[in-house]
Length: 256
Length: 249
Image (cartoon, rainbow over all chains, first blue to last red; front, top):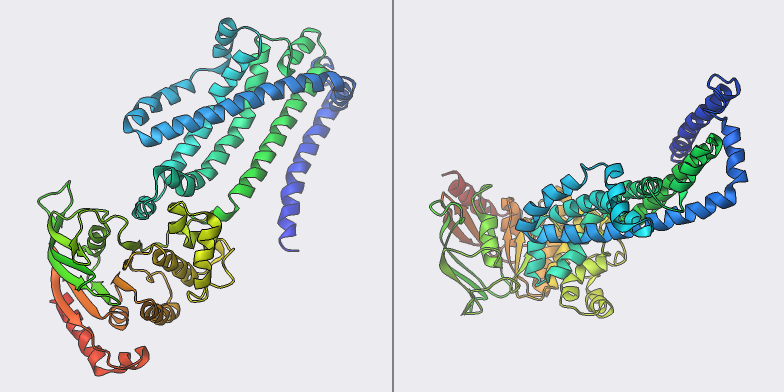
């Protein structure tokens, strides 16, 4: 009972805040404090969402496909980079500044170049998402690999463990927490990255939908799409959270 | 023949070659024997175990295993570090069977090999637990069991029970002595507790100085006394006084 109470408050307090903001939004819109065409009410956005649901789902499918493809490539790239940097001091010193540099370039600046080079299909979008998502995961993985107790590695070597076995039994498990922390950030980046790349060129996706409804001044539909994007990011983050809890439950309070 | 023989070992870290840490260390370990190394913190006890385990190489001196001089010791002597180093993502049974898993033995077969020993190590019923649900004493026993299954004849134990409370430590000392006798384990053990050294070891070596050398070697004669009676025996106090005098001189 005592444990249930904090869980309930953990859920109730943020929910109450969200509901309060939605009520304020609804009241402000209905009172036309801001003109209706600039700020449609929450209920109007919900109606637009229901009305355009089939179309929104079609675009969502494309956005999610791009996000997952980009995120998968991002995870793969992060893994390769983290392994290379963990195994070679020269590569570590060489790649580290490049990795940081890759994150200093704004996404909106790279996107048009990628569209120019690779066209309006899926490829430039996947590349952009890969570039934006690999970094947090690579940092998390590398930190996990590097922070394994050197004595444990020595102990495993004294048991004639191969490099692969050291990764399997010590380094990868130690990197799990960092990996999931990075992944939680990267999944939101993947959705945002997909939408931004769709803004700048493409035929399908929530970014394309937003541009189209914006041009037709259907701001209620635009808000509906924004709410959908937020919901998608939240759902994906929650899935990451659940996966993280499942895979790291035995690492609680432990240091490898 | 001695199982392990250390002859005139000296060592300096490569980045400080002129600063010797250990100088002219010699001792031996016979089958079924326990040797305790005592000395103040930072004197070089762990460094000595690192040399014996093959983590590092001595600058001078020789190490013999069963009469054969060994150049590459890594993997030939089992080592239990101060921290239990259990892998939190593996079940207790797999942690214990790790030496076999690393030899690429199938998991099922490795588990079958270690399972019969769980009762002996007072871990029966905990095979499928994860390390984070074990007590400190159980974790140490689990780590010791893993060291045991490295299947080497010599065990190096670096303050294996130092993290335990006094009562658990005394219980685990008794237990360690019993399994050492049963399986004829031959161990070199580092401890900060003089009582523990005297209760467990057949020989005690006191390391002292900079560079550290063996300042005192004692062969412990317990007679037929149990641990409890031995601690009350005048010989126990005499040994302890000698070690303290050496450390304080």
